Length: 243
Image (cartoon, rainbow, N blue to C red; front, side, top):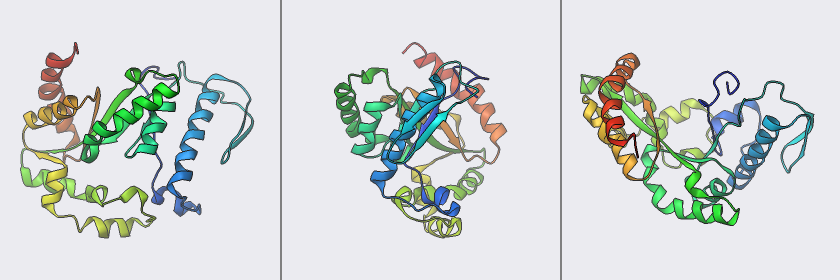
C-alpha cells in the first residue's frame, strides 16, 4: 500500500490483545515481552523498507537474508499506541507518532512529558512526532438508532481489556454486555447532530492532537461520511487549517 499510495499510509503498532494471538496457538506473553516485541518489530520494518537481504537477530525475532521485494516509495510513519509510561518512552525513542483512543485521550497530559524526555534522551525532537487519536462516534437522525448501533462495541470499554488473557470473543461479548447504555453513551459520542461531531474533534484538538480519526459505529456509514464531508470537515478546516 505504501508503494501504491505514497504519503497516504501509516502503521500503528501496540502490544496487542489475546484474541489475536491465542487462537493461533501462541502463548499470551506478559506486557514487558510484548513491548520488547514492538520495539524489535519497528527495527525490522525500517530495515526491510530501506535495505535488501536483511539480517536481524533479536531476542524474539530473527531474519536471515530477508528481502522485501516491493518497498514503499518512502518510509511509512510508524505510530505506537501508549497508555502507560513504558510504552510512552518507546514512542519517544523509536516512533514517528503517538496513537491513542477516545476514552483515554486525556492521558496525553501525563504521557507527553515522558515521551518528550525519552525523545531528548535518544537525540530526537518530540515536536516532530504526530499525535493521533481515534474518536468513538455513532451518528444518526434517530438517537436510539445511533445508540443501538454502538452497542456492538461495548467490549472496548471492558476495564483493562488489552491486558486480559481473554481470547474467546463470546467471553468478550458477555463482559461487554455488562456495560450499561449510560456508560456507553458517556464514552462514545452518540449523537444526532453534526455539531456534536465537530465539538468532539475540537476537544481532541484542544489537548494537542494534530491527527484525528473517527471510529464510526453509525447505522449508516454512507450517511456519516456525507455529514463529515458537508458539515464536519468544512468548519474544522476553516478554523484549524492554518494551525
